Amino acid sequence: MKIRLIWLVSLLLFAQGLSAQRYGKNYPNFEHKKFHFGTALGGNSTTYRYVLKTNFSQFDSVYQVGLNAGPGFAIHLPLISWNIHSTFHLRTIPSLTFHDTEFSYSYWRGGERKTISTRTQPTLLNFPILLKANTKRINNFAAYALTGLSYSYDLASQEDVQQSTTEPIVKLKKHDFAYHVGGGFDFYLPYFKFGIEIKLTNGMKNLLIQDDTFFAAPLESLKSQTWWFSITFEG
Image (cartoon, rainbow, N blue to C red; front, side, top):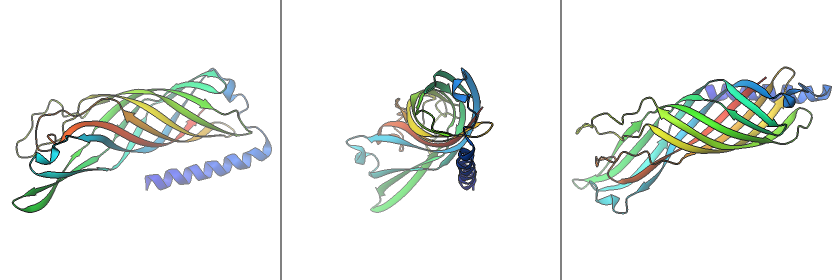
């Protein structure tokens, strides 16, 4: 429902931006402002890039490990942008994100094939620094690419939780660093700028806490990977 609403709003604003082009340039001084502020709405989907140990099938007869990314959402704090140049901008948009990822393990026991799963549900505070490079404005439209780095802190980390022998979990570290690549389109409306953006974030740190439990033992490393879809509003 939320995704459909986002797409509906995007289409309506896109149509408004196109119709506005008939009447000339909207917000003509926007790109000449030194600083501007805004906000964003959107969702995300997070999984992990994982590496299995070469002998992982020896651990409790596990023969397959799978990850299923669930939907997530983000609460964005104010977007702050410094216009280095009319086509280059340094910006940050801290956020609080929630996501759910399922780990599924298939294994043999007593001659039978069985499957068991567990979930990770981090709550992350994200602090990105991004460089945005956009094309020169064509009437009320511009395209852009962006890249950058971020630091994340997991408020719901179970790093210090004692493992249960009956219901073990995948324990992840609290701190993560990642790089971002993405792009989008900006539409200049009469009183603000509206953007549609898609972005990939790849974690650079091995988040796995290896404690030799059923879920952790077959894994060599886990690194986060998140796809973001956002709509931005800047004024």
